[in-house]
Image 1 (cartoon, one colour):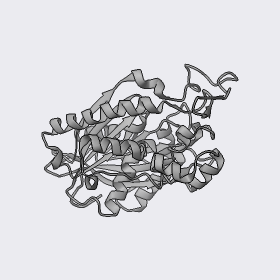
Image 2 (tube, rainbow, N blue to C red; image 1 turned 30 degrees about the vertical axis):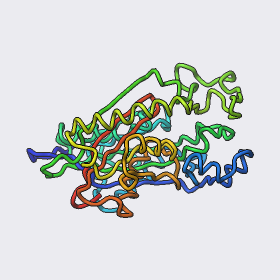
Image 3 (cartoon, one colour; image 1 turned 90 degrees about the horizontal axis):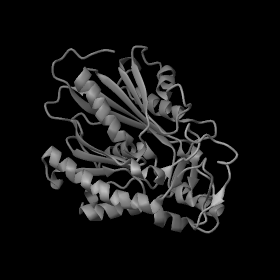
Image 4 (cartoon, rainbow, N blue to C red; image 1 turned 60 degrees about the vertical axis):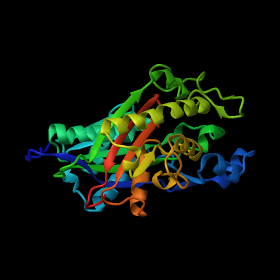
Length: 350
């Protein structure tokens, strides 16, 4: 690993790229397959018109490599300059080895580059920023590559509208770099965990606690008409919604207090893009003006750990964000896990 010899190091988000699989699942196709929902009803309930779906042979590593290659092709950083790779996924290629090790090899990163997986889901990007900041400012590394990548579609039963209408597959690559900025560019952070909610968003079978078997493969139908087995993703929507309405405003207020700023000092709020209904309820509860609040999921769906970096990249590209702006990112969901952190857009842009 290459350590920065300069005594002062400030971690800064330097670049974000993302990758969406080619296959598209729009509401018209979903409606025709589900039978009892129209395309308009799906859009009204979720705020999502289309999702990207990984091909059968396309895994999280493939998506992550594509996002990272786009970052290197931009010229912002050479692959030889990466000192550490953080790979956030809940759909790894294998139980072992770590997908980060596979990605390190495929990207041609140095062999003295650190690489690790972490399984955090919807709060993963904010957790990843905190880890990257610690590596840069605490250990003196220069360039940390944070990749978030998910293929949730592989967990979803095709007749489970409760999750199939929401989730899409994607990856994002974020470069966190040492800078000479005088002010803090990433952070502070607040975190939260409540494992009592683990069963409300879960793939029950497939791990060591409950291996897949004939028994776990039996498909049942719930009271809402959704079909799934224990091998598939299960989400208790009402419980997730209730948790979110309590945890997110508290996290936002906690971060404002830790940063010693007022809500009006934040230029833009980017929450995990779960679904439009939930986002609008949160915005109203926290009394945030619409122009300072991001809703960016109509064309890609809920991409789990990649929603915040994709929303950041798109907000920068279309001018909603500019150099010097202060952004609050808030991730929340599976675990239960949540995290909130500040991001300052550098003067040279992202």
